[in-house]
Image (tube, rainbow, N blue to C red; front, side):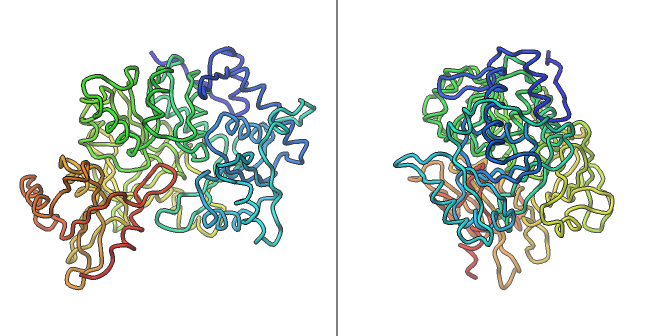
Length: 515
């Protein structure tokens, strides 16, 4: 039975509540070192003192680009303890992305990790980016001077968690990055409903093997604090490194996305018959489409379930999938609306969709961001009733589950007929030769748009042929108009740095030569 979940107005108060209850229980694991909740809270106070001595306090804007490490989590909570406004940047971003974000934020402080010979020089990158600004940012290195500062007198922490104090930039997979404003309250709400959906207990061991600077990083930490469970942190995710570490620490719930599920399946297929992580009960995540067949493959081969939920940078948890849901629900939907979240589905003419009808998902509730840093974007982002326009297409099933059907920008208009890229992708993924797939619309003189399937082969030596693809669709009973007119085989499709999501706009750029 799931333990009662803690709640608090701010993240720092949530830390204090957890320390009062289970101070000596493990919270974070990195390599073979463990931090208890009490040790984490003490480390946060030391780091907050170091930051305060450098002029950072309530309302100070701080941009940071740090890898997924325990020191990063401690630092970000030290900023939260002080009431600073923090802008986490994915540590893999380069000068192009950083220049665009820093030009928007113009934060007075920019924090990077210490320089290590032979590794990426974050300081050099930060220096080159800030030199182009009219009012240069001060660069700080997250070293012992901050993390191990002597605890001094600190101002009282914020009492309210409703103010925007977190700026998360969208990944920019379809447009320029936008800064979504979150508060402690929105992130706590997301962490609590995530914990409730996954039915975690204090005995569970989770993972953060993706960039902590993603909104899911703080959401996962909020889940640990609310539930009393622990998590293993990985600076870089690869199954060769992750599997032995996760086995050693008895991971039960692993967070990530579709790319992570596929990676674990590929590793499992090298050792058929024996689960590579015997303790694993749930693979959880969101942020990218999950083919239904993938659920059944994980169930049969990894011997765990995939609980794929629905969220985004602007609203980290919208619908939650739970291990208690049926196989059909877990394979063919993305969960049910989480506590407090209102979801409406709007047709193209502005009317509300009936059950089973696909339309744009619009949401309102405790996990939704407070708007964008560029307030000019807010008028289009929210409708007249205050619902956030997600840009996602989906339907509400008869059982109340939300099933995503694609993106508005992913609808392919072929000879005046709307075709769902997601539907075609789900069919193609079932082919045994396909490892990953993306379907896009490309300009076509006769059709307006033609359907193009781009695939990565499961075995590069035996790629899918066009005739095999057509035959597969015919056997599936798909209408002729949905069979792709173009098939492209790629060794590696372009992906973003956060959750390894396929960048369809890059595929369109590469393949848009008229045929």
